[in-house]
Amino acid sequence: MDLNFFKNIRILDGGTGQELLSRGLETNGTLWSANALLQDKYHDLLLNTHLDFIKAGAEVIVTATFATRRKRLEDNQIENKFEYLNKKAGEIAIKVKKKFPNTLIAGSLPPQNLTYEADSRNEEEIINNFKEQGFDVFSQVCDVTNKEQVYNNANIIKEKFGGIDILINNAGTVYTGYMLDRSDEELENLINVNFTSMIYTIRAFMPAMLEKNFGHIINISSASSMTGAPKLAVYAATKWAVAGLTESLRLEVQKMGKSGVKFSSIHPNFLKKGLFEGTKLNLLGQLLAPGVKSHDAVAKVIVNRAIKLGFHSPKVPWIMNQVVLLRALLPSSLLIKFSSLYGLYDMMDDYKGYNDGR
Image (cartoon, rainbow, N blue to C red; front, side):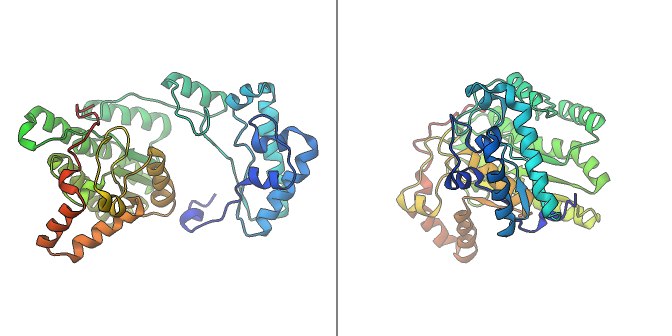
């Protein structure tokens, strides 16, 4: 397929399960749209639904395979239908494509365990579940602050796959409190995990991308890269560094004539649970800079705005862009007063996150 296809916004047929229900599909258990595959009488209903989506302007057919993974089929006592259901979904999609040859077909791949629930499986279980469904999964454990481990893993991956297409630098940690109250060792670990590790991984994986002139490196920065904050001095410094590294490397590859290698930095505000639990601005601050509800919100921005649309430095949520605007418009003296007004000075006072460098 032409990899440039998704450089423009494309319309997919979607919400198929709800549309089938509105057209008379009767569901059993938790199979959703898979009921249309399970019962012969609904095959034409599914076919016509796909066709109507395409006639309405959709350019990509999404197969009705959201509920056909083994876990869901086991729960509904029809695990033996795994191959049949997935094959039938493909056959129906191909019939649609024959009528509209310019459309593409995409498989619907949901979470491999339960939908809308935390995945508590261990690494081995997850890998085995993917392999059972025909996916080739390769997993390597690596301390990203250990450059020998990083380079060794990169060599293993290059030998096995020829390199990677997307690198997401997501390792991060935090130590809060006044800088002088933290030890040198803690602050060095903070810098190594949040910033130095990215230098190692990029140096390890970027050469193979340059050879192909294709790839995307995504570095997770933070809202702290847009404004400093008390009790987060060194953490904020690492996130500013990530933003600067990403922007500079983007310009470097363009100067090298390798514009097929993309760089994005992601700038999420603080997650309400986990690493930054308890971080809180006042009411005005929450309106101007709301926290991020879940990791899924960040993941969607990575896929939809960075990878698909090529955004250089998307903010999460998008309203965080106004912080950049305020920094540009307000003089420093007013910016400091404004920061105090929305609770920036006190936001770490009730911090309940890890704070141990994990």
